[in-house]
Length: 433
Image 1 (cartoon, rainbow, N blue to C red):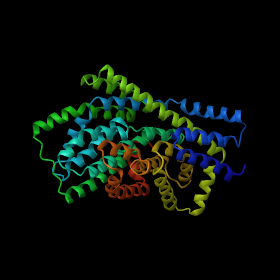
Image 2: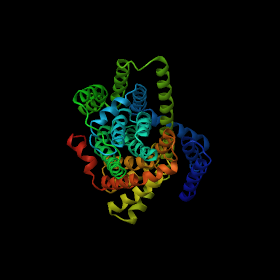
Image 3: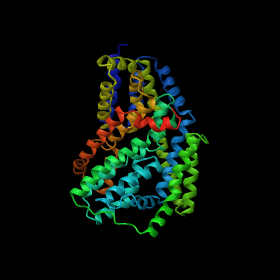
């Protein structure tokens, strides 16, 4: 079968269904299965599709995803955001536009606990929004800061998307990916803070005053139990006490105990937590399952090999090829969410990166950092939609304020792309790669 015809069918059905408003998972499944009919009989195609889905989901590693979603839902409901916001204040004393910096640091901390950009965005935004309004912050600027900083929790572990990349890439070490994400995640936060600092100086926003020592002690005391969860889970994975999946289960138990100690759980809240966990886990796992069908189609059609050959024929210089891949992913991120983009494009671009000598851990961070930017970009960035909806500000006005953040984040993306040790330093230091 002519590859151009097959590719036209796959891409054509995919784009048409997206434009008609079908869910991404259904779009991936339908376009992939119809394309399979060009290669195999209908009954064999359906059987192969079912085997692909069951094969990828029948994995111990993938259990980490619903566990981390569960622990994140508990953390979100247990009222931990206020404690983390207060803790973030300790790092912003004397900085102009202090509330914007508090927003960034809080998103980094809460994202690291929940593993979800949107959960961090909502939890922190609900706490800081009214305070920023009272302090006369421009609502669109404050929203832009919240949107630009919430993806830091996707890079700072534990991270569901890094687990997904590990699965799709054929078993790249989750532990290595987790520790590789720390420095890029912190750099993303610092990049957003640098723009916030410029805005704070330019518009003369108030500074965070000195905090009395007695209050500092109370703030640290309140925050320590939450922060210890990160130490327990990540430390346990590093020391080999448990795997990433077992660490996710430990995170659930820890967050439950914490919520019970804080007396922030009741039967009604527990129902909401379980309901949210089931829905988000179902969506994530279904998306992973159906994306395996598309991966089969791409592999069977030899498309990744052909793309690899075409890209390398353009240039054998890794800088040029990685630049092209980054530009493509930045464009993809404007109309596709992070998870499906990761599932679809990892099998296409990873073989190219490996041929160029790029470490799979480094490439995983490049892809995640790149697609994190897509969460904030129009027209379909989830963080953009949620942030504007939460703050009740227009998307058009918010995007104007987001532009300088995009410039800094894209500059950091290329820095991370072309200086591998930013990602690989910690995993190498800890003997994980």
